[in-house]
Length: 107
Length: 122
Image (cartoon, rainbow over all chains, first blue to last red; front, side, top):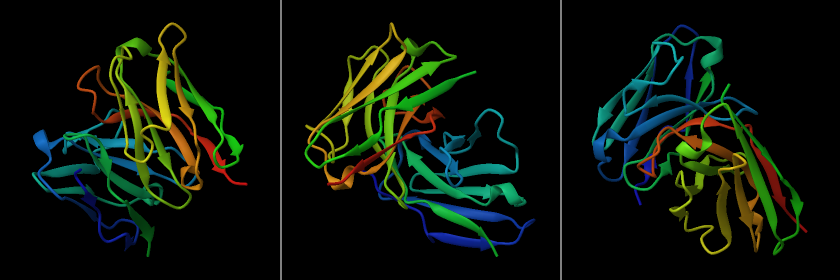
């Protein structure tokens, strides 16, 4: 099983700052089959990024994904109030696993 | 619009059974694989099970294999999850989610329902 590690568990930013979130895999993720989801309290997850770097339909370009192999990154260029949430990575190259999540909170 | 609506959650005693349903609309249900993903209180997301578009392929997480059974009725646009021998660590919000593709079976989830809550407690 591929284990995805998202650390740290919580990141603190001020609105307008740039946020960089990390997702590290225990082994290489084939074909960059990695997705990112956003989840707000009491809501279902929402797909942001798939294929490591492709934005899902309707996702603004302030969200970007990068990486390959075992190291992946989600970047939010300028944080707005609605971006403070929990972000999960998921690999789908070998079965399916999720990372533990990173909470982006207001500093 | 594309929509998934889960139902069937509730409070159940350990060892008992519960059946969840997910009603799909707004897309051709029979063309896509489907998933159940759960989230224990205050915890992260855990993939539970998947079923291929035609129901021929089913996969389960180790934590539920042998206790949970996924099924689908393409004529009724409905996904189901039969949960037997429930345990306390099955307590979670259960989400129904749609695969972005027909194949491969393991893929990302482009649409999610709002979830239904299952509490296993005596």
